[in-house]
Image 1 (cartoon, rainbow, N blue to C red):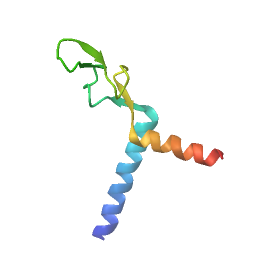
Image 2 (spheres, rainbow, N blue to C red):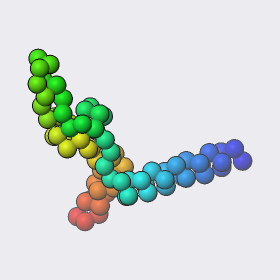
Image 3 (tube, rainbow, N blue to C red):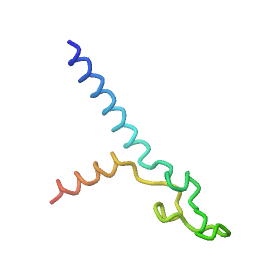
Image 4 (tube, rainbow, N blue to C red):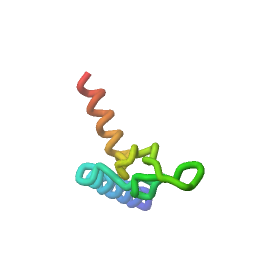
Length: 75
């Protein structure tokens, strides 16, 4: 009975995350904290964040996986 409850909770969490990835495919970049810029090595100037390329957003992992599976299905 307990394992059934765990499976149901995992399925509910996965469904909620899939819905969040469909509605909000982007999240704030973790490296620049959603600002889109990072300090240069000298600390005097700002540069575009290399991870998000200055957009301050990144594609969620679940959305990236969904797009990958769609690309594989199209082949």
